[in-house]
Amino acid sequence: MSATPPPRYAYLGPAGTFTEAALRQVAAPGDAQYLPQIDVVSALESVRAERADFAVVPIENSVEGGVTATLDTLATGLSLVLLREVLVPITFVLAGRPGTRLTDVTRISTHPHAWAQCRRWINANLPRAVHVPATSTAAAGALLAGGGSGSHLEPGFDAALVAPLTAELYGLEVLAEHVADNERAVTRFVVVGRPGQVPAPTGSDKTSLVVHLPSNDAGALLEMLEQFAARGVNLSRIESRPIGDLLGRYSFSIDAEGHIAEERVAEALMGLHRVCPHVRFLGSYPRADGTAADVRPGTADADFAGARDWVSALREGRAH
Ligand SMILES: O=C(O)C(=O)C[C@]1(C(=O)O)C=C[C@@H](O)C=C1
Image 1 (spheres, helix red, strand yellow):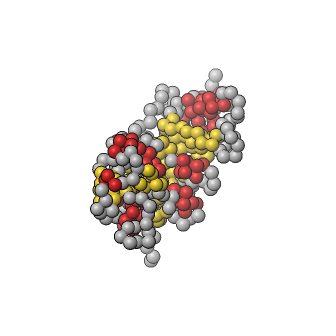
Image 2 (cartoon, rainbow, N blue to C red):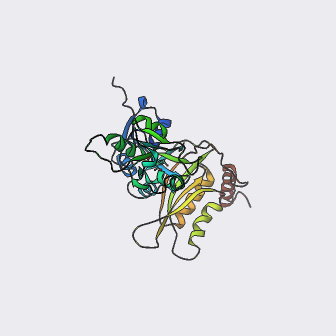
Image 3 (spheres, helix red, strand yellow):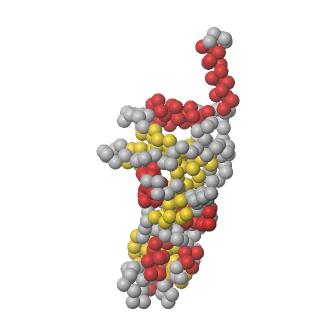
């Protein structure tokens, strides 16, 4: 009998990214096949093309906001669903090749989101330093470690902003610790799969959606939001993204509190389906922070079931 192969996880690599730290919370390296990718689009496309079973990608930084590459790739193309979210506290060190002096650093490489989280520190401590963008924090660390001492792989920068363990992984020297504008920065990651799987409700869930406005008329945004408000569904995130075809056309990326198995969330989705030209369901999945949904009086499952029974009875002439 052949053993089931371990699940394949595509993620933003190489080894040592914060995304890999998120993946480790989901599946230990011994229980899964780790497939590092150059960017989040490649990670998500690997799932669409069935080269991977799941992808782990960043979706929101506490400092920089939504990760637009993730939001936009999920919004169009073959449908994908979110299955779980994972929070990773973000701490950076400035690392260089052994022997580098902090005062000599003028070019720093890292992922643009990491740079955004350290801008004030850099301005205060290395005001002349410029940013050299990299595909990930660990990619910057790996390039730096691979270059120097006569190597033809001269990276064109002298330090990298990476996680403390990543500096160690690539044999880099820590030039400065606690490099951050906000010591409590957190990035939210999601586990993404192909449709056909909706995790069971836990009482602390989120439902993610992409919604186009009902019209271009005054009040269109309000009409969309009313679908949630009228059913007591709170939103934990809403951001607009350009649709891309014409200036002024936006798609809304939304996280709503609750699970599609709950009546109030299902009713809100039905309302959106009736009034909006496009609604993409991106999944219902457990919240990483475990916060229980706040169910307003009159919006519990039993309230909806009771109301439905009452209307049925009216229709059948059993009640007045
Ligand atoms: O470059 C990495 O290590 C990543 O995992 C990407 C990423 C991001 O896209 O936000 C993840 C966490 C940090 O906020 C910085 C960079």
